[in-house]
Each structure stands twice: as C-alpha cells, then as structure tokens.
Image (cartoon, rainbow, N blue to C red; front, side, top):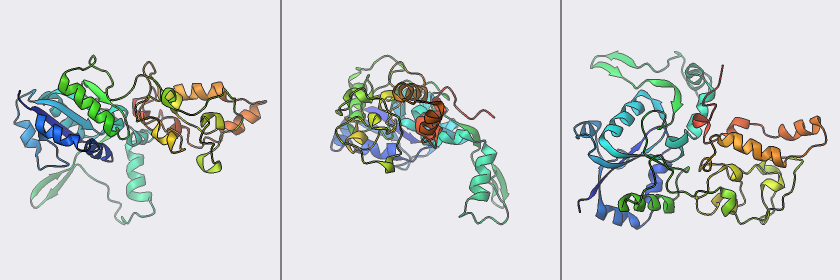
Length: 319
C-alpha cells in the first residue's frame, strides 16, 4: 500500500496547532510509517515552488491551520486546495477565525494606525506603514497585502473537514488521523476529532438548575470545584461549545470553558447560543438590577465570540 502524502500549512495563527501535531506522542512514529510529509514549511525546508510543481490532487490530506489575513494566505489556500484530495481546516483559526478574527472589529486602517503609530512601544518617527511594493537597488520588493478582514479557510476555498480546538488536543488529532487512514470518514463538511454533544454533557460538575443574580469575573471568586461554574455566576461557555477537548480540561482546572471547540451541532452562532443560555439563568428584580449584572461582562464580543467571531452571523463590525 503506497504511503499517504501529507501536508501542513500555518497561516494567520499563533502556531499552537503545529505543536499539537506532536502531542500525539510516540504515535508520530506510526505516522512516519504510513505517510510521507510532502509540505510542512514550519518544520522542514519546503518552498512554495515545490508545491506549484506538483500535479493537482497529489497531496492526499492537507492540514491547514490559521485564518486568511493576507494575500499570501489566500494564494496558498487556493494552491493547496488544488493540490490536495482532502483539505482539513485544522484548529480554531482555520475553522472559525479564532482570536485573530477579533481584529474584524476594526478596519485595516485602524489596525495599522494602532500598530504602527499608537502603541506605547512604537518608535516610528517617520510614520512609516508597510507597503506592498518598494523599489530597491535589487529590484521591486513585494510584501503580501494585508486584507480588509480575516476570513476563515471555509470562507475562502472549499473545505472537506474541520478539526476544532485552540489547539486541537492530541487524542483528537490522532482520532482524526485514524479516521483518514482507515477511510472511515463522515460526510464531507463534517467536524472530525470532536464529539457531537456540548461540553456540559461531558462535564462532571453538579448542576442544580439554579438561577443567578450576579456575574463574577474570574478573579472575583474562588469557585466550588464540585458545582457548575455557570450556576456560580461565572461565564462558562460549556452550554454553547462542542465537547471533545478531553473531558472539559479547563473546567477540571477550575477555570471556565472559553469556547475554543466551537459551536455544537445544530448551532449556527456560538455567541448567540451562549447569550440565550445566559438569559435563561440570569434573574433580576428590576431592569436596573439586570443592567448591573450584564455590565459585568466588560467585553461582550471577546467573551461570547472569542473564537468564532469571523465565522459568526456578525463576521465583522458594521460601521
């Protein structure tokens, strides 16, 4: 049986998904037995030209992590789509935009102004901002264009499967690889390497159906380790998040789920789902009391859409 041809690519992300590949531990040796890596710029010295020379559909599976923020990301996404039989949105950034997608709250000009003019550590007396083309003695130097908004991989090219997580946990990465190798894949468009229920369904904390009158920020309270965090007034995204991260890992550490595994099946907008869950549990005697409770959420978009803003119904700021 010929070896599989695998590719990995890192676009707009922190790179944690690249490291998560190694979290499969010694199983990486099994991967080496059954597959050849034909493109992985973060780990091996491949050039774009190497991929461009490949006939279409040469790559069996490409794991693409990161959102599409520049013209270079878009070009490589289109290139790898053409060269790959299966293209997998690998991790939250590729699947939903993740934290880089929160930049969609601002226009490109606002981001440049902040980064190159306003930050306290900026030393830019000439007020220079990046240009896509600069003439130099060696010729014309080019930089990729910073696009107007961050898009997900699926908003850019056709995607076969998605693996959620920031980053995906090692066990789920291996489960996805096994499914691919065995050919035991769900229908195209499915999420693999995760569960079909919410995080709450695998959370071991006790739920009593309590209403809350106050929302606490994490530093304001030491929560009971046995009881539901949301019923203690801590914003835990479990009701609006797909399970599969390994048994509610953050919750086990007494920290609320932040939602990195994305919305559960049947939910289009994770933030809206969480707002609905919160509305069902929040109780107030008056509008002023309700306002006081809601005002504790100092960053609503960053709280309810930390990982999925670019893929939400909103997608970007409407100005």
